[in-house]
Image 1 (cartoon, rainbow, N blue to C red):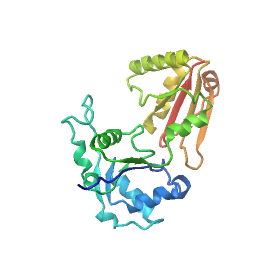
Image 2: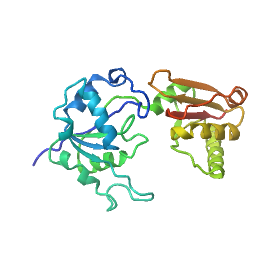
Image 3: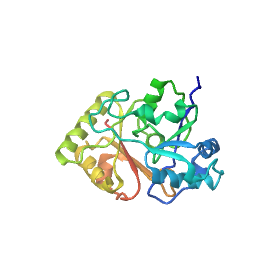
Length: 254
């Protein structure tokens, strides 16, 4: 019986949709070497994956031409769909190269695969199928923002995207602020860049003046910023956010 290959979780830079950062400044050499060697991929988006691997190939020659790489896009299960093992998506089929003894790469559009990313379902399926999983070091916007915030790094929660509808978003922010206060827990959220300003405005309207709010923009990119201050200071000294750079929002009720 053929021993399974390994599912490699290959990190990507955080410059999607922004001016490109030098890969060697944000990805370890071991990641570049592994990415260049892999011939089978499951990716969040094939276009951005090929663009990244082209950049990798300019530093470390690819084992095969870019056009010859086997690349499958990661399906997104519909809302409410069961986890791996269901009939909704045949996750095991995506693992076919690994089950046949070939190494397989998992690549997100930005950051670490399976963290704030649909790839976690494939990783779960790999464990169920007996496929070894190897994560690799690379940038995570959530961890970088938390580290730069000065907020509680001992207890924190990533809450993903907040509702877009104003009333539901207000209720969610109040709920999360209550949790933060009771548990002394930092709350982390993200938003589509063109909605950065709308989310910041909602947070400033709803959060209590004493709540500490931190916003990190364009992490690992040239000119990246993190501002961490009480909501009262943000209101008194407003600051505009760019609408094309990713941002991470963190708050801690005091």
